[in-house]
Image (cartoon, rainbow, N blue to C red; front, top):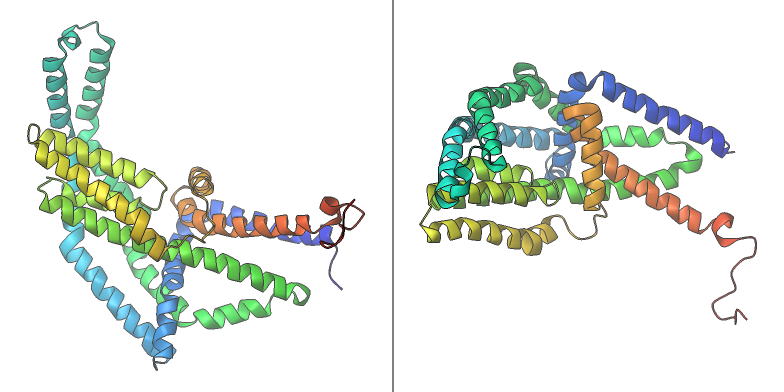
Length: 360
């Protein structure tokens, strides 16, 4: 006999509170384990496919791990140093870019030369801030990234955790399934399948979209001659998973830099704008529909709220768990609404008349 609803709500609410408390207290400690688990979840379908092709689980996991290691080495040797150098150069060049903007505006809008002009004073204050904080910002961005990752520990723990989780993924799923209360096992399994479908459709698909678009933007902008094309393309691709933000930030940054670098060469400026227009067309009409699909059920506004709330409460770790939690809550809320629509509270004491019967 199942427990009363009040007791079930108490136990599940206590579990949720313990989860949030652990996230609050152990955020930095569990970060490598969260990342390792996310990598294992992302790669599990590939391991299953290799198993169906004839490999055992150990061989499939080893093959995937070697492939990922080679990709990581390639990134470290060929891409990441260039990204860091371009990021530092971009931040250090910000004061000069701003001075050019100020000169450009002053020449074309002489009223800005009035020292009492509010716009002029605002531009001067922004310029002074950039001059004072430009180099500090570059060091802070790079230093904070290394601090969040906790370099050595992160690089050692994450591959080990992801390897063992990927190796034992199916066994862990079976073990968790054996812990489900028997009275609720069919319902919990159904909800778990729905959550997995949403996560598989969004997380795996969106990561693929970010990689494809980041690669496209970086290569296209570098071929177009944009000075900081690689870092701009990487930024635009990395934040594509945030609805609307990736295109706006990447496009504004690229076109703004193009205006300073190619001022007067309208063909080059138009080419930079066309690259982002083509990228958005490909994302909305080809890449996202194919890789993510239209049936994920994770609304952009709900995703933005989850990212904002969990990021503010739990920092970087909160951003990592925001999407899975948003997906799970979305599925649970839809299930609760389905239950409400079939409840006596919604339908009333009298059953609705059959479809073939005149309700009058």
